[in-house]
Image (cartoon, rainbow, N blue to C red; front, side):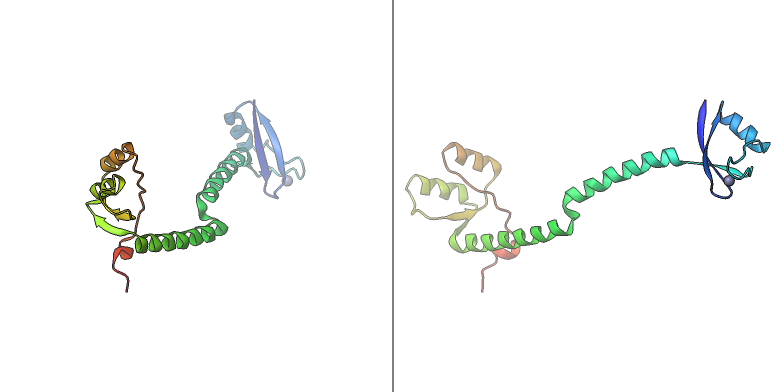
Length: 153
Ligand SMILES: [Zn+2]
């Protein structure tokens, strides 16, 4: 048994029960399917059931879009924290000495008192940072934009 959602030419909606899809088509072709409201036999099938499922799926994916930060409120918050981040990097750069690739070596010297204590910045590989960490020297990876690395006027 199949239940079809049907509509007549006047937009009346009703359900029709048929043994099979073929049975429905055969009865429709013979004009035996009639609207219970106006007795019109110009009937078409409605896709209301699949459409309901589809709208459910669409709703689910729009929820994902919202949580990924497209929401205007979230965007504003992100801009504020990005500005704060930039400010933090500027003061970090102003307060630290650039030792470049000597970073790991210099960090060790400071740690063991072989060099004056100060804040430094520079490049280090993951292995170098891991080795420093094992020696009790904490380093912080900061993604500094290249334009901030230029000497400030
Ligand atoms: Zn009708």
